[in-house]
Length: 319
Image (tube, rainbow, N blue to C red; front, top):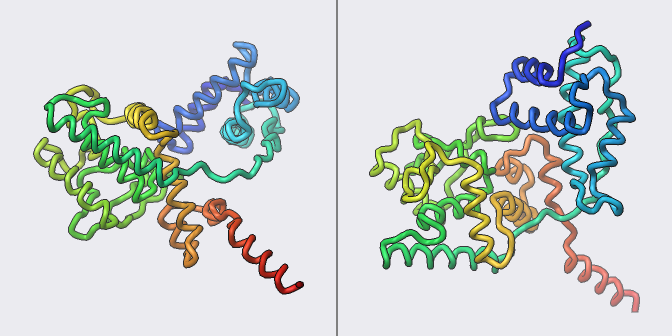
């Protein structure tokens, strides 16, 4: 039996599972956090379940540690480390037989997903329109430059509910305006599934505008389509990344009366689909690209007004 280091374990696991670079970075980051808690020269085989529980208590938010991480963040750490240990134990890379990360996840309080109000979306749209008008009238960058491009980005998230990584992975050739469909590639998908999604009628002019601009800028079929660097006077990266998109939404939030993120657009769309009286859960699962139907059902919330109507009618019947 071998006894590899944490970094060697991540390397062997990543190669065996053929992980994408972003996934490798995630595993590496979690391991780095755990090693920071342990002694610098600690090996995976030296970790016990008691050490894991003690680490959990030291970093998870509580009454005595209000600045700690959320339970969901801990569960994410534990899930990644448990997978590494399972792999290491199975292939005898770690000199232990019991996984110290088994059954250390925390039960999460069930809360409604954070969504956007109609007012927030309306205000965000108005802010972008003002920025676009400013750039057109004064021929200089606004605070959210280029405003037309970020309009397209926001409306894409609003009408499709795709994840941020999926948007970043869309290539020019994956948009078909004639058929009104686009490809949400496996590369950007959380569950590694590729699927075709419709381009809703309200989104069509925005995507069309983006494709026309890409054509004039000399984009090729395999180029990243949503790439602010190719249209901006300020940005100079080769490809658009997560940091740039999050930076835009941070600015947009300042002008919209509340926090706006790509994932909140996703939560908002999912919640609206589940509140629809004619909701089709399987269609919602397909649009959201959920692998497990239970993920879709998380967006089903009690309708307080419907409950009130039922209880009011019951009281009337008893009188």
